[in-house]
Length: 140
View (cartoon, one colour):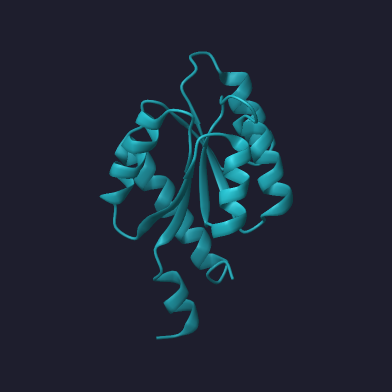
């Protein structure tokens, strides 16, 4: 097996960030049932997310947009500026939150996922990220 094959066969590493413990638990359980994806950390606000991402260097972070303290958009700015290896998808539960979603995309989010989230949406996101990682030579 080549190094590129070895790297691309590693599970996609994901950090989950949401101020709701219920949402984090739901996401962890759902992602735990998806092959080749591993939750490597969780956080409940943007500042904690930055610490976790610095520590574990995940492939992907999934952040809630609206959180107390440092919100998801502020965290997205810091992640993009400091952790180029980690790509970011955002979660949104706000009806009519188009302006927040537009800002998230403008700041570099790869996707905005509406709550309640669906397994098929997450599976498609993870497949896209696997393809991205493969195209980038494993992201190394």
